[in-house]
Length: 444
Image: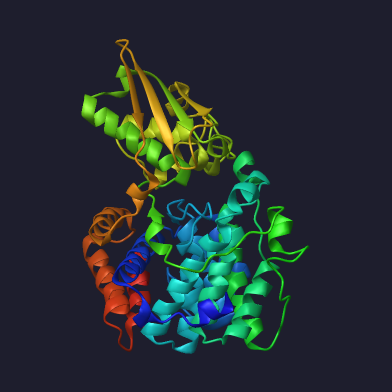
């Protein structure tokens, strides 16, 4: 793995890999631009606690921080809205962990655009490979894929962007294994610490790479050893294939909220459009998911809820809001989770069932209408959410309408140009321009 990461070169990436990286950058920066909330307790606490001075920019502006602290703060801000990119093989989110780690160290070291691109590719590629054989068991044991596997993406990207050799990169990955974690009880309880898991994973990856750079070493058998990562978290040792490319399989959430609920909402709205249905026309909706997804903490819960996070995870809540309004917005989760909102009574018509015939991210909807008709529809494959550049542009342009700026269209155009310049037209100043575009779109 150390050799794989250290040898990643921008000029060796196939066009589809570069296009997907550019799409991931634009998507994650677009999400971050809507993520700053000065009233958010976690964001305020992060700014107060992680305040080591440095030269690394915060996506929403403010005093620059050390690389470790900037990575954590920016990771939390991307994750805060619950709309992140996803890879099925790790059962979690990548960009919110990898991008802040790479860009923080890239600023600190004045890395070239080509090294930034190579580091982002390494960071995105490694976690799904580590997670592929283990994620079913780690999820069943209550570990969150984003932070458990994502820390290796942050460490890989950080190691590559500062130019560690294969041996020191391997030690960075080994150190990261000792910093991996994150549990899903928060989604059962509806508590808010999920974005902190993301922040910790990004910080930990930077920390591991910097320690390895200084000569700190770690176990050579950290993955496959009898007391290593795989045995500890999944109970069995798994291969980590390093051939091909996994980044083209990364998907984007079209809506805020849990990744498991994205395709069910998509299919629900598709049926309603096709049949010209209103909420009042629908008697019940039965959602069938893979057993591991139907039982994932929070998915089958009905409101009212005590916290926003419970709404973020709830399939009935997300589907009912979409049924009522035709879409979902971030504000739906923060403003409508409580007992004051009538959405919870209506969501009782939506029931979640486990179906052993379905694989993770597969789903089926069975809708019973007031007039007695029954409609059945299978969701498209999860690859339907692996958007190309044009689709990503359209999605992110829509997201820009929720940015806290007077002219979201102009701010988005500036961000788009900055992303394209960094990814496709490497030149001095590209990263600085991107960070400035982010700050300009994230605060009024």
